[in-house]
Length: 278
Image (cartoon, rainbow, N blue to C red; front, side, top):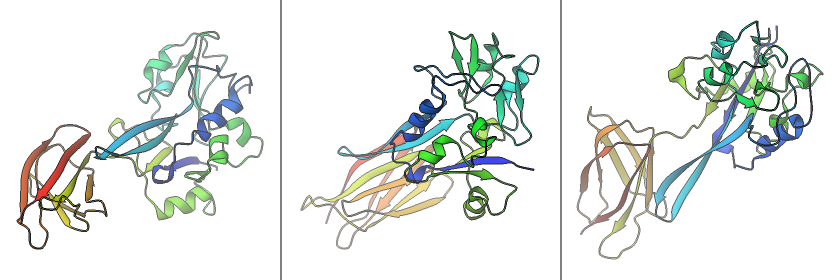
């Protein structure tokens, strides 16, 4: 039996928006009964990109892109909230909102914990990504968003086929849920999701030059340590840092040890310039 799944490697997403545009191209103005009816031109983003900034220095800001769509959950809140079978799961795992039965059922929008269901005011209908099920049923091997990705960072296929692209990829790489705290058992998983982030720059105080290739150690309150090295511009960054109190230290040959305590309270903590003294 076919079991469709998707894994998105955000490390290679360049934010080109091809996936979002392809979704619009496929669904705006086109009905595909009994799977879906036309997506509105504006307001709906069945595939969208979330942008997350990561600050390394005042002039060095990196943006991470996260493609977002219906997660086609194994524990789908929309199915539970639907009346008269208006939302259902196909045998291949794809979650569909019936465009006839779901008319008037706005509670499906509120039910989705991922915010992936949109309300069509004109048609009085909740709508969302279908994994382009109409194309898969017609012999396609992947949705339009996957087909148009220039970096091939979206992997899709049949988990029950050991030779499929998704099976081979998941055999090599272990993805994670976008919101593991929700326990929705999604068919969509991710690699490289941006985590809580601590960064800064190391500089020689006497010369005002950056310090490349110096070890920077981050230690949390429980004693756990993370170590990274500064790049050619003296910048360093730690990902997946827990909330709470931490200390940081670094030292270069001929310079005094630098140490400092600080507290991580949000998603991004920029420590600024760290000056090493002789």
